[in-house]
Length: 300
Image (cartoon, rainbow, N blue to C red; front, side, top):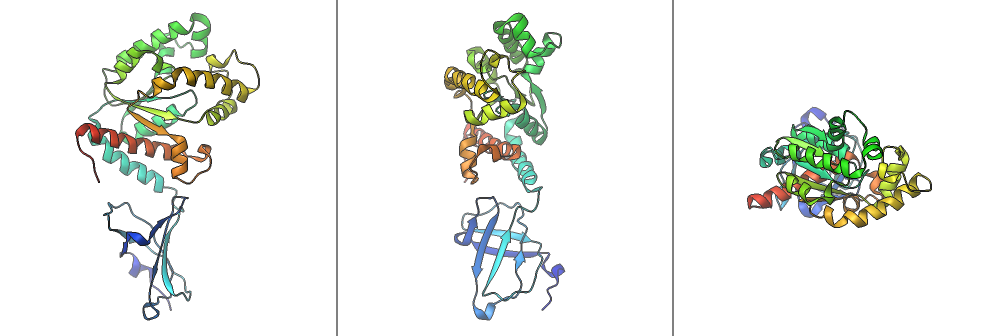
């Protein structure tokens, strides 16, 4: 029997949610048993489309490819063979969130190496915001001198003063995603400025942070220069001390994205296997929860 794929272009299948199983990889598989009289030869691979789903059932529009095989039931399966699926999800989620932001700035806080710049650029692109990095702005304020050189020449207090001044200026703006320095949270005045927007804490396990920093080197991290040992050991020792000092301050953020919890939710054994898109999507989900609570409602 030959199946004309063109006839299946607009196939729509309604399935009770009890038969809908999610695989840890992020793909979805569901099995719908049918009787011998209803037996169908083809196996249909369906591309899941982004639809709003009801509590009881899900509707999936599918384009399909078929091959002949004798089976006692109809199996439909979506796999991660479309690299743009995450991009599409990211786009859809950002479009849901953006109207509720009202141009508020988004401040990313977290330890050094937590990915604030990488995630910030993704969020800025998807939300049609501008991106800014507070460390870069401080460097510009000091004639292009690098952060490491500023620490060496003028000391940490001088850098923190410049950091606060940069944040004060940013707090009066709209439509920015701002990646902040790891220590920006230690001054209460900085939180006052960030309250004009939405702050997001990227919470990354210390082991993962140390691995990231060791991989790229510690030269650009002035707070690590006085530690002994190899790159990983230096990073882990100093990060442990810094987290002890700053941990409570990070909890002031409006939104927390815990990479350990996110990896577990996605069925990943290591946070290092998370993609920047995974983290950005989770950040948008958490932002949406926060703004909906602020607006006084919650979607089902």
